[in-house]
Length: 118
Image 1 (tube, rainbow, N blue to C red):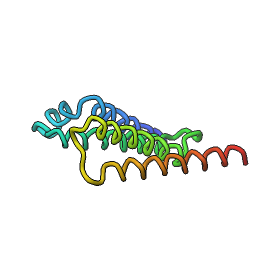
Image 2 (image 1 turned 180 degrees about the horizontal axis):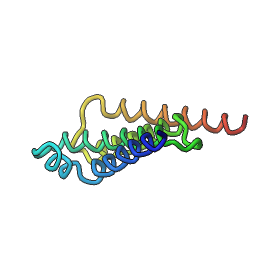
Image 3 (image 1 turned 60 degrees about the vertical axis):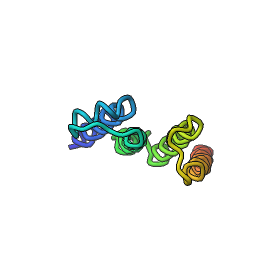
Image 4 (image 1 turned 90 degrees about the vertical axis):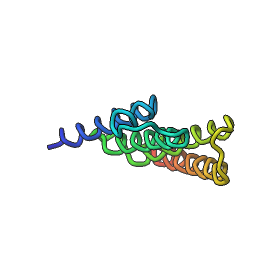
């Protein structure tokens, strides 16, 4: 039944790509509604999380949860940083969230390098 996990991971990856590329299209096709600008930003962040979830669940042994979390934190930091620089969607916790994701990215990368050396 390993194929079920692969199929579910592939579906999560496909959904993540739709959310990353066009959250408005996802909103129209799945929810039957338009998304607001913050809704589109949350849709893209959800796409990043789903992509990481798909990586974590992929049945290949080379894919580890550490890599999935590393990808999630790196992409989340980059996207949230982009939102902050763009200046259209900036809440009071945006920059602390960017900093937290960057710190976690650095820690996960260091742990991954240490594990490869061991």
